[in-house]
Image 1: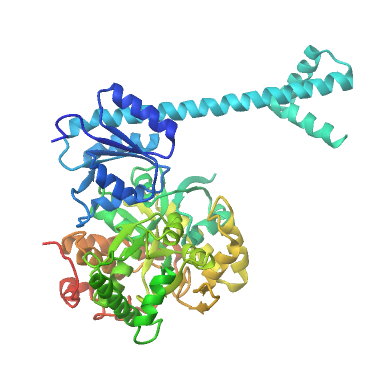
Image 2 (image 1 turned 60 degrees about the vertical axis):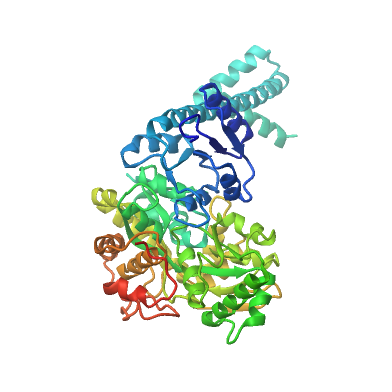
Length: 196
Length: 388
């Protein structure tokens, strides 16, 4: 029985990068049978064909409701599937929902064997979210710097200031108005656009 | 000092009272600072409500009952003190299936008994010809859509578990699945039926109000223990939703309500389609045929918003009929206890209750529903899959 060797894990995720990060983490931890599904058409058929022990799905995926159907006793389903987290695992479910991942397991797979898989997923999902967040912040920092540079240029030209003086003026105005330097810079850009 | 609340919803027209309560300022006037969170799946809404990431939610009425009984997921007692909508779903079929049913129909095309009988003949012919069984999409195992589809086809002699395939499909995927031939029909809420008709890929065969006169569709759901700890906040929330429901039902406000609901952060569908849904005036066929019904979707009229425990009992009976759970008197009591007219009455102090008819469901087939004898009631239906 595959559950006794390395369980077969299916990752349902429309983000290829996150799925790759997850897949890599699981492989490193010794879970070799990991398959990624990114195509949502006939999802159930794909899952039945793969016959996994564990299914991981990201919570932004509307197809999560499709998986819920597998709980229902139906002729179409070979094995009933249950959510890993049971009544006693409120903390686990909370952590996984907050991280944005949900896990389903085939009945009979031992809980001790699932715990490390879910923990790993949660930490990878969190790491991915942090990465995404940093990327967004870097992007916006880059944008801010461009805006500030252009505002400095405008001030230097209009008031005959050095770059240093232009920056000091921006900063002191921002402090006085209790705003971010980039916001003051943006208003200079907007104003100069209007005065053109 | 206003109370912050996080409330989850699925972008469907029957989230109207909740959305209008927030965006029209009724919630603020009650001292509530509500953040509405647009969700992508009922499982997410359920889980986030259950573990406390949401204070309240727009929820399928059967999911509120299933959570309270611990069916399909962890057991969390839910209280539903306000109905966000009665009815509002429709059954849409592909042009090919529509033609096949119309070729077999013996009777009025809006008579569900006539269409179900025709469906049975279509199914039998396909079986004889060795064709694949027909596939029907619905939104969730614990959904009115699932039960309405099953109730309708079983009345005509089609066994929903043996003769056809019933599959869960997220509502936003319904239309493309119908167009792509992955499903032959679906039962879903607004606006998706209209979208299919507008694109020319489907015909609305039935408003679900043809099948049941009154069916509790979506509820405003909170955790029962939260309702006990926050009675005043809950009462304020019920009042805000009540004001909004009242507002939406005034014909002169429909245009404004539809505009609020169409916003990209809310339902993100053309305001005109939403307007038609609220008015119960739907294009049912790609050739432009319109159909009007005063019962298509009831938000706040005819006492729709006040939860009726008999409705919960009917939904529970469907779970039993289709083998989702085994009957127990205790579970029935729990299910009925999810619907809380007492909380509604306490918050609104209104006597807006409809005169309770002997049968508050009004199903087109079978004996009148009797919550006092579910086993006897279910025995009257030939097709059923009760758990031993």
